[in-house]
Length: 116
Image (cartoon, rainbow, N blue to C red; front, top):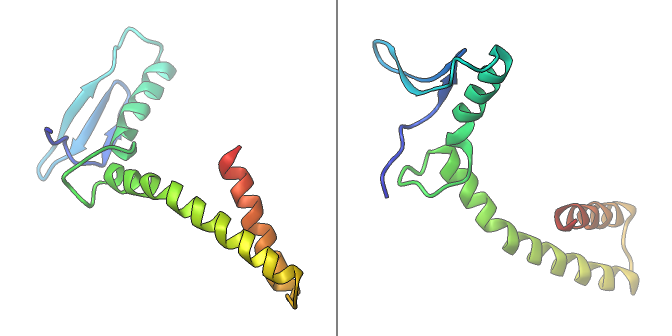
């Protein structure tokens, strides 16, 4: 896999640049035929590319970090669901504080939000 130019990339009016030691260098150009607002929006979108989840050999790359987080999500969700179910069974047959129930309810709401 080829390596991309490390971020951050900075959007400009019709281009995206990487800050260099002595000067900025262009990563991508956006069509100058487009209206200014659209060209700027496209430049911002291209500049955000390094944060999109992707495989990368650089462990400090934001996109690689985001991919690791997304890859961990299914396992985190399953474990949170299992823990919530067990705690609800345990709490319903014995003592649970209001704080315990608040945390269970928040975890349950997070599960619903994540699986909608």
